Each structure stands twice: as structure tokens, then as C-alpha cells.
Length: 410
Image (cartoon, rainbow, N blue to C red):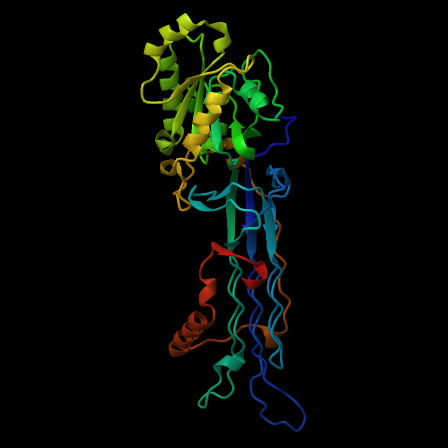
């Protein structure tokens, strides 16, 4: 894995900007006695956005950029001058990226479409200047509102490749060979276990200029849920697939038992995978004749459609494509857009990333003039009015994980 640029799991620290303080300035000018309050509002802190980019296929660019910080909003000034808003930060991610809270493992959001923009962390709201607090009975308020603090959160980004068919099988079951035959992909093929060390995608051509995407993941073995072999690290890449294609060689001693082992490992990783539609392909059938094929039929699982294929001899590939195409386009197998996504737990985490310790840079302190600082105290009735003002003017900014069409509109 050291020579590979495919990174599908990374932990980063995000921090939205804090809002600028409102100004408590009182107008002072020659020939203008008792000018009154003219303190401006502070600018809002910068947001943190996620944006889907179909030109990316890995998270390696975030592996070496662990800190994503938006800038703070500037304080308000005299003459009702509004402070400048903080600069937003946009994180470009490949399609199929899911985001989790690094501490709790809770699923936060995901990005599955090109150009989709999700506001991950909301910037702090700017404080109100003292001009908002003047009234007939309080004509010279000498206080302003401090800016709202930003949000700091360590998140885990997990890439799950988007494909229609996911290949599942033991090492050397013929998964990479099948992908290389039915598509233009060129995965590494060799006669030893764990030749495939990273997922491979291929576009399979079908009748009438149609196509579907097939994903090959490293082989899993019995006990993978306990960390044997490559473990279950790459099974995340078939969670979004519409169909699972189980591949078992024809020379296996007990096909049904091997199929059961694979099913149990998938259910251990994510119980939802047990409900996905499945197709069973008996591979390497060029090594057996028709008589042996008939003898294998009683030992096959009875609850899954089965097809006999040989990638090298290109036998049964048309029947396999037809079966996969019908299964993919079956309306009963459609994955709903609002399908629940699992949270991270010990089975889905990577210790090397979870144990990463951030070297936090110090935040720059504000050097504000006294008249620009949000100082002073407000009475209870003033605070109540202040909250009502925020709810009325900033109602759209209460949601952290908001899907937006344009970051400038957020």
C-alpha cells in the first residue's frame, strides 16, 4: 500500500471562523453634540463547505492537509460600518465521500453528485453594534454584542466508490480477471493471494450502447471481521452498490459453505448488506465438463440466481451480463436517495487515522480598539429581544449540514 495513491479514509480538523464583535462606538463630530450610537455590526465568520468533484478519485490531497480553517469575521466600526465577513473554505472531495464525527462516529453527511455543495460547519454570526440597542428610554447604549464563536470539529472522510455491481469473493477467485475481460480496466493479475490491494472500477459495455459500472475489491477470507488478511477495510466500497456478485471457483470443495462464509463476513461488517440483491457466479468453469457441472448443481445455494462462467475462455459472460442488467434495473432493487447510512464503530475504523494527533496552530488574537469591542452588559429583556432578532434575520443559518447550490448564497 505504500506505493499506492489510493486513500479512502482520512481524519481532518475543520474550524469555521468566529463572528466579529459589534462596535459600541458613540458618534463624535464637531458641531454635532450628542451624536448618539453609530457602532456597526461585526462580519460573520467563514463557513466550511464540501463540494463534489468527479475529477477526483482519492482523498490523498487531504492526507497532507489536515487543517481546514476558515477566517474570522472583522469587527464593526464607527459610522455604522459593517465588518468584513470571513473567507469561506471549500473542501473538494470525490463522489461517494461520507463524513463522520471523529469522536462519536455519527454520520453527518455525504456527497454523491458532481458540483453538490454541503455546508459542513457554519461560521459564527457577527455581533450587533450598539445602534441596534438604542431606544427612546436608552439613547446612548454603551455596549455591543460580541461575535458568535466558530465551530471546531474533527471529522473522518470515508470514500465509497460508486458502482452498480460489486465483486465479492475469496482471493484468487477470478474477480480481477473478470473485470479485465468485460471492461477496459487493467487490474493487477497474478497467481498468489491478495494481488488486488485497492479497489478497481470498470465500465462494462452492454447491448444497445448501454453500460454499467463494476467494482473489484480485495479478496476477503474467513475471520476477516477479526482482522485476518486485509480485514474488512475495503467492504465500504460495496455498500452503495445495487448488486453484489459473489464469485466462487468451480474447483472449490464446498461451494455452499464458502458462500455462507462470505455472507457472514458481510453481515458482520454491515447488517444492511444482507438485504442487497445477489448473483452467484461459478468461475473457472473451463476446468470442468458438463458432467461435473451437473454434479455441482445440488450443492449450490438455492436462494440466489447462479451462472457458470469462465473469464479466460469467455464462457457464460453474455448470460452473466444479462442477469446483472436485469437485477440492476429491477425497481425492487433501487437504493432510495434517503437511505440511512451506518455510523462508524470499531469494525469500520482505521486505528492509524483515529490515533492521529493534531498539532493545533494558535489562533491569532484580536487587537481591537476599545470602541470596537463588544463590551458591556445587557438586561434580561434586552437579551430576549436580541434572541428574537437573531431568529428573525438569521433563521436560514441554524442548520449546519445544509445542501446549497452556491456557496455565496449560504
